[in-house]
Length: 112
Length: 111
Image (cartoon, rainbow over the protein chains, first blue to last red):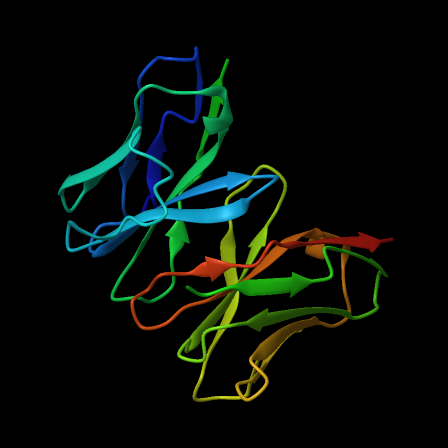
């Protein structure tokens, strides 16, 4: 089992550009979570999906952020337009029926 | 929503000593309490969890205790080793899988 896969691992972009982060959950898992981690705010849940349906997006900071899960094996988190304050490590995690959440390696985003 | 507070923010212990991290939560309906360990530059990984129907759980050198009445839970690491150095996060959730994390505790084990 390859675990949760995220791409890219590192992303450096300029303010105003669109950023798309990708996640492939563990096969068979039915819940997927997007987190953001910063020194100031710690680990924050942005949005989570259950059976490909967004259940709670109350953590999405603003309309510049959007997430999709078109099928059980793929999800994207998009930021458009990006701002320097979006710089953080973004983690994707997956679980089966609310059991242990397995985190991916994360994407380190830097917005200049 | 759920609010989880974690103390201390940093903890330095001598190798072989014990380390204790404490968390409190606000939502009395929370029933799942996992602990994650995150090494520098790595992903968070679950080390132990406890559900509200038990008061204590142990796995080798790691134990977690839960006091539902007081709404607090603690992580105990005994016989600490250098590889225990990491950031530890507590979390709490209700049945909807949504985890609320504490701010983290940076543990340093001195050789």
